[in-house]
Image (tube, rainbow, N blue to C red; front, side):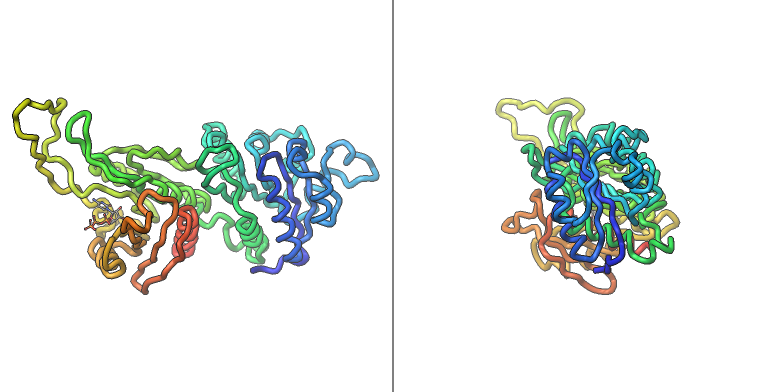
Length: 409
Ligand code: CTP
């Protein structure tokens, strides 16, 4: 943990059910010796009180634009520059839209327009609001302007929906603040978005292999892990192309999604997406397809034997992209879903497919991993095996994305 003593954060708390988590964030910041000045939006006041922010931050809380114009008060320009970092947590869809548009109709948005300090936003909103084209465009705009983003997390939401949109947990926001306030950032030596300028290719989901126009062969992959990896890489600043088989997951924000059905289409889309600096193959690709898929629906003929399907191998997408050659991404990462001899089989797969790293996971039915929300994985590289604890898939994604950032640094 970095020492935050002597640093000051201007914390803008906007409206949303997650605003209570700002209180925990203030506690963590104060515990690290960081000064905190809070600004509460009108919407934020419905969820936390100025008094609780003031008690925890031990500083005056600002809420109104116009009193600040009094000679006796700190001016809003001065307030916007009084901290080392401006943090918006939670950042509602509304405040993100104001930031993207450059609006300044209340104290928070005015400070965000006036500040010359780095800004970190921790979005929190309903999943549909997060996935809305307007929010996606606003986030892309903010990222392009160098605004730092932490989260959102994926999970069950207060509105009874599931998906990305939950405020990042306070310790994760604290870690992002520490990273931004670390001395190398002051010196401008390390880009705050370590994967900025990098292109990442990610495959996700199952493939559907047609039998006839209405039937196909599929598997139980949900796409959660691959989609979370794409989102985490984008969160670190990478330009991400996500080649996804049929899934019911929403597209991650700020990611270019190519939707495909079959393994052959997935390979084509991956090849079209090259060059890439890193490629992560999280899709559960079918090993075979039907040799001659019927062009019309196969009909039952009373008394006749059921049809026999002739299967032929699919191309191995990972092995094809990882093969030595000028188009090979610098870092190629595969997954190995195994039910026995996990490490040995996965490492053999890494070597056979010429991957640099393999994420090995145990998919025996008792683990509940396949299609579930958590993953128990081992990172296998040429240097050895690292056992990771059982983690939510978005946590696995986060860890992997930071390992990728370190490897490409
Ligand atoms: N993979 C791929 N293309 C395929 C098959 C697999 O890109 N046609 C990738 C997967 O995305 C994963 C890795 O290869 O990253 C391992 O896939 P897995 O299905 O576990 O291995 P297989 O090669 O199919 O081996 P087996 O079924 O014998 O375990």
